[in-house]
Image (tube, rainbow, N blue to C red; front, side, top):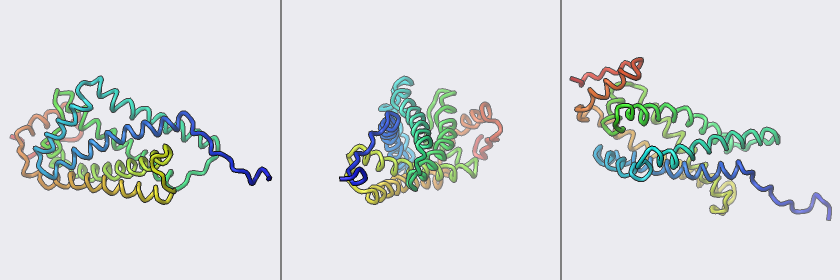
Length: 238
């Protein structure tokens, strides 16, 4: 039998590739919790706040736990992804379309996620409180770009999580299917995640004008202090 005819075992994934897979699954689990929380907006703003409080007790009982469960997997996923991309460039591998789309969605997600973390996590924490349905409604009422921003964030996040999960589970052998079936599964999961996020975002956008503005003055002072260039001026603030 010639060398060309022999079965050649697939190369073992590198350490960085394994790290990319496992850290990606950890990030995906957090995203799933986040999606369930946002979807609670469909029920009522109070349901969103209650779900958010319950989820935070799981992944953010303290800043240290949050760093270990959320920020560490995210940082490892970014570093591992960059290392894997560098490995593939050195090997002159040609990325298949699904991989190129994953890279693109990941890049978009990284940029938008940075803005989201600044506005929804860091900024409220500077004054000692957390984001809520009222906080989101204040932003929706103030700036036209907030809803399109979150729709784009939802699309990038849903696609990257759904397709990434299909690829990762396939590589681990937990999703025993061909490439086409994995793509279909990934797209299906992406659509489900995206619709859940769309429902929540749409509900807060529709309900924002009717939201209780009791805390709006606090939010406005917060933005004026730390992000004055955004010109937070809500007409319902007294």
